[in-house]
Image (tube, rainbow, N blue to C red):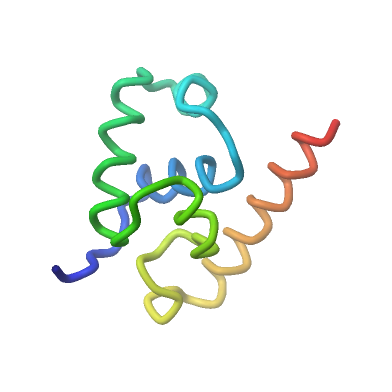
Length: 91
């Protein structure tokens, strides 16, 4: 299966899930239902060819199916987001 690029919502959910956020936490932050988050995660896993959050985190998800599909600016922005989320969690 071809690895399609993630949508903006899928990207945000993937980034949050990859840093350890639970479905309920993601749902609250993005104003979605937990069931919608689950639905998006299943699509993300299928698109990226992963089976779990652990695999998602191991891929170093940065908002695109592959690093080659990302612009340098998007990569920097995604890295900054993950960094801020990790810092926020440590507080």
